[in-house]
Image 1 (cartoon, rainbow, N blue to C red):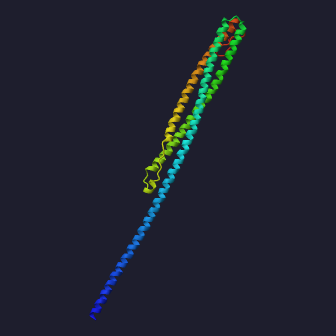
Image 2: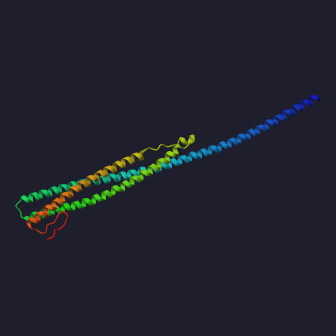
Length: 254
């Protein structure tokens, strides 16, 4: 009987120990379940953050892509403007040649044995043609100068857009990012910065060509005025019509 009671007590002790172990196991399981849920939530938040980062970088890539497309379009426009400057330079050369030709005609008319009125009429026609060419060249020069100013303003806007996009992209890249998200990070080339430099060089070249064209027009205007004075003096000597100065003023009769 004593041995049976002892055995019963032993079994009860083991049962109590087993119950304690079971309670501890249940608590450990609940803790593990809670930790797993927390870990899953952290993973979900990490994946969501990575997706948001990737979306932001993709958007910035699209912005920079649009800026590159705009830069290419402006590059084409600058090429067209350069062609117009070359055309204007060629036109100025033609005007200069016409002025030389007019001077040659005047010299030839002075030495030829023709009437004074025929000589004056020939020179007047050459002077009128030269003046008309100068007017057209002035109008083209003014239009081109306006275009240069407008393209310079567009280039400044493009530079500001690229600077803002790159600053936002650099900020997105420097923020902490999970391991999975960092694998999908995209390096953005520096093409917009290089394109800005190219466009700026194109604009400077265009402005320099415009200055050269202005100098050509100035030379033409001086020669035109000299030719007008020559015609006026010739008309005054031969007594044909009224004497007209290079400024287009008729002297008073008194």
